Length: 372
Ligand code: HBI
Image (cartoon, rainbow, N blue to C red; front, top):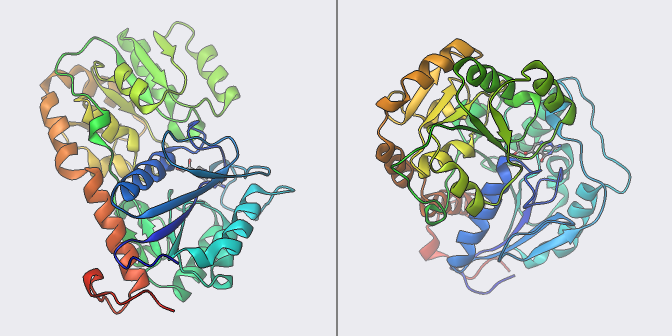
């Protein structure tokens, strides 16, 4: 238990589907990294529990061994609850149980049944940050039970994401944010378009490829190649598309690659909880063209920082791409500076933590020495 009432001692439970720093953890990786970095820069203590092999430049990660969780988004609404033998998630929860007395608050980023189920078994309060929309009935059920017993402990990115759950009104919308210093604005652009994200069916990459094949405009693709079979299908369906795959890059290298692109294409098939790649592109001055679905529909200012397109319409993408020069690239950077700064994100998370730790809403500066 830390003695400085102004600073919190936080334990982050990472997503158990992959090692942090590899792209396997998807968008929530950026949230965990940015938040941990900024909280540490503002005198809070953060320890991250994550699967072995995780690496973040300057943040200490406690590596936890064990077999990874299956990504939930491929499992369907009737999926049961599954843990592999020697589950890394189970090992993370057991480690957290053993050290919980050293922390004021545990922040769970795993979108899995176990941490929700174990919440009543812990003495230290647990804040659950939910990184996706509703995925299965079994998960909805355990989440509804948890939020009923522990009101105020669910954080989400967006209202659209919350509305996919039966307990929408109980979720606290925290939006997202990024370290603007890592992204350099570029007024100039080349011809290339860009697509970013985990290469998996729910991301709809094939529509972006179809659009650029029709237009003959090059498309750069970056992100973790999660589903090899899906990627091969795209390559065989669009053999002559002008696309190149650049792998998963660190933030610094990624923004070098995307900052001069003409626009980012986002083609989500599912309700994208937020779409961190959208604010990464906007931070570089790159306009965003996206299906009007999920988080991106709340981020993009249609006609000002990009275009919102009828979902699943390749023709809509093509029309928007032909209009992209109408967008002022500086307006894109401005929007991220105004709405998605890292300090604003940190303040929203700290306000949420205070509400959980001090439900009587005693403001932090009036805190006594933390409970005995
Ligand atoms: N699946 N089972 C499971 N657990 C997670 O934490 C999880 C996931 N799928 C994707 C995911 N997390 C992250 O990529 C989210 O940011 C989307």
